[in-house]
Image 1 (tube, rainbow, N blue to C red):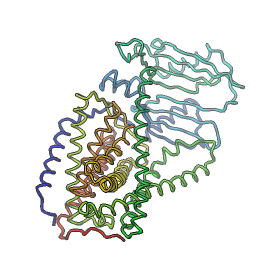
Image 2: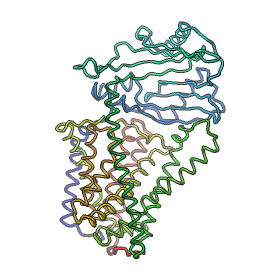
Image 3: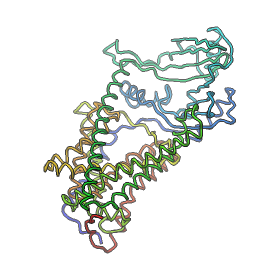
Image 4: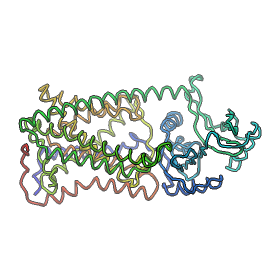
Length: 554
């Protein structure tokens, strides 16, 4: 039966309840959502794009096709910083495409391609016909080419009286002349800083390409002021620098783990079976995710590479990446489990049993239930932190759109599922299991053992669009130390369950909020899977059993 509830467990349950209350009361204030729905699926976008290109005279027979979902984070952030969330959502839907389906038709070994972009409402917002430099065509004068471009815009429903031409250029090829024209949409300007006229103005624009005597490109876009772009690039660069620093330290930590595992293996103190199991789980889940992300892999294909060579390189890359992820988890798990067996033996309760597939045990049931309490408490902390930071620390984060790389997976629910499980196992083993054990042994200080790996883990997330850039590092350093306390008090299995639940819920929400029925169902599947450890825990709690002993080396 389930272990008796202790005072500590009751306190954790109370913290979880408080956390859920904070999420319920403050979530929208802390994490605003972009007010735009995704009305079309990948298949519907492909159908709309195909119909449009065929109207432009495209013969798509014999072309391979790939489609991905993409977004312009810089444009979204500019709109939200200047207009606010509600008006930014209207602009993203009606004025300029911020999110879109990009569909590409190509042939290996051939330059010619067709590309089209479909907005969230199903309308084609851009297309491009890529042709050989030496392809034949007409040599029109600028006025004649502009007449073709304006005729195309009229057919697309544009009122030419609302467009102000801002640029025109010609590119003389050997066998034709190409023209590019750009217009600014009248009364669709956004001042970056009203108090500083020199900061620049953003504007909605339209572009048309004429290849010879045919329209070969069209697009709507947001021209962003250079001053904003420079500030945005500086912030992104700073975040990338912090993230790279974290990655370097993590790699060093993994190398140290390899050395520790080898040394302690010689002394017979390493349980390789447990480490291999967890490493294999992460490697296989990564492989599954990569295989189902085939649409994006195919979209990035360079046609100058032979198709067979491309497939061979993809398979080789998949194998090497799978081995890397497996090894990356294997050695920190082996070294960390060996050290923790001496320093924190109670923190390993159930860890080896889970590796052997023994989930339906009272011990795992208790760990799973505690994991939910930790997850709820931490989600409340995240919500409260950003609510406070935005009001009193000058923090700002963009409203999240209901879209992400999730949609570039053949089975959308697999993205949050695999990312959540891989992150939960890999990050908890290297930063909590090995990191805390290593720094406790080196420094003999529990505080430093909690702080150092938490900070390394936290600042690896600094490339997220949160301003100022160090805010995410502060947030997750605190969260990492709290997870460290959970590791010491409740054990590693509880940390893994909590981490998995938090990520699964956070990554599944974009699907639930997409506004599209099929994606909403996928999101509910993901969040439902986050309940799986709890269901196992409930079943396990009804079964008799004895506590799992701490695994010996072997």
